[in-house]
Length: 253
Image (cartoon, rainbow, N blue to C red; front, top):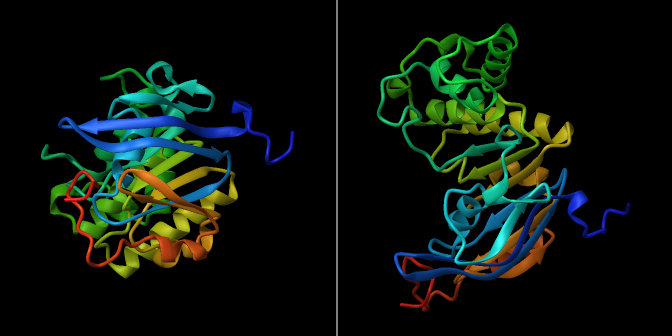
């Protein structure tokens, strides 16, 4: 099977004629995208272009108005192997407002592999320790997440996404507003996953230290893909004309 074969067997993600509406407004329209297993894809575009909507639909957090998304060949509504997918949302308090330690938040990434309220097995404890070490948070594992800096909280979310040893990592603005030290730790963690063949889909305004890892970039504008190709050539497509304003849905205001 060649790398250009478009059968589902070689695809981590398949997006076909995808349209998504939010609050009665169109946000994505007719999006087609295929992501090969092991590929590192950057999703670029201005605010309101539909980047976060695309990846939230990709991981089943938003419904499609039309079209479909498949993960590893299975339509998202029927997909059950969520342990194969790690998702890092935009920056937020990792504990979601509930008092929790770093270790407790990271362990929640294993819920798809064990029953709720069942004690962790040794393998689970080892997976948590490995994930914390990768993001350099082992020494803070007993600290309350709410007391951490923004960069440290983001590293906790990354550890939670890594703990199940996923085949696909989906990252929404993972380094936005994060200090340079945390960016470096994050980039090294992703580099290790990429070396093991993990597929990575990352939304970003500025690739920064991640730039060297990117195989391909797509640029969204007003809910449609306007560029799909080498990452460095994407920069001329990633900005709308300065005199054109967009509303929050990505359509012209």
